[in-house]
Image 1: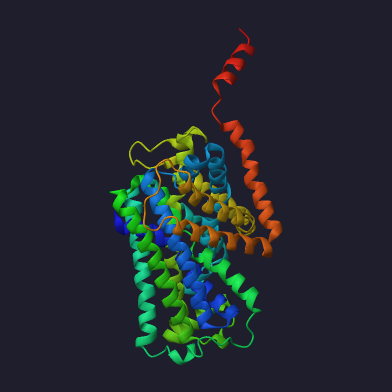
Image 2 (image 1 turned 45 degrees about the vertical axis):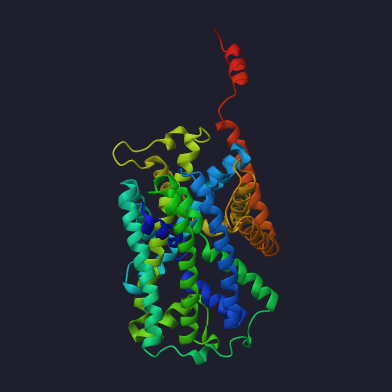
Length: 435
């Protein structure tokens, strides 16, 4: 993959369904455009600090696997396996299932489909995207880059149209700092918005999982990480303020109804369909980025003999980790079948924040010291931000967070079964066999 495709991976998963839902919910809770901008900018600073750290790690380890590889090098195979177990069994298929399921109402807003087709549609979406990834990195990279770059162009076009057409008014943003009546309590609003913003930015780290398939990684990866995060920041800030300039804070009913409100304000009766098409494009780009990156973790684990060896094989013709792609797709289909993705994501999200932060700390454990202008400021900023997010999650949802930790630690039992047997154990086992 070249620079454009790698930037598309960084920005693709971050700019998905949340771009149309999160800004409205955050604005309604915070009640102030200035507070909304402050939360977005604070999260952008944290994400940019993390992107600098991840670019250094990806350049040092330009192979498939991302966080799995960084944790293996920094903390050993057991910690790395726990992250890989969480990714393979829970978080990756759960996010994919949630995005595919979330796309259905927007398809129904464009065309009338039967309830049976609506039920089958998320499965079809996952199967098609899995097939595209199966058939080659170059093909899937082009499809993913095209979808994500088109999505960003459409979002910028929406912002431009909102102001050029006269539907947006800066008067709707004033007063910038005064909180509107009906806003949530300040601490609760900021806490909820910080967590929402963190997950809205989520996914910028995915490019590290594809580092082994990036051309000229020492140049491409740092540019892709930083440019991708800056692009996501610009999109969220511009889209948020365009939303509020068109639909004032006091008229926001709910985050789900906001898409229709914004669409109708810009395009009249056809607005709902137009905005629904934009949402689908965003979801497709995000899903494509996820389904490209996630299987590389299982592939890297299998190559280390820390996972079933069948998932460490490349397709003889297409050169893709085909079995790992099948595993990710089938896992998402299974979770979709049981409809448990919302509960799974709630349980595991705290552990995901911890693993991301732990990956950044490996920069302090590498053999060759980091000699970058941003070190150690960037990892300290990211770790401080992660600590705040993790604490807020624990305060808001302590039981799901602790259940998620238990699920991750349960992977240690599987690690014992899958770990290569030590020479002493092999010798002892041989002596006990008949003959």
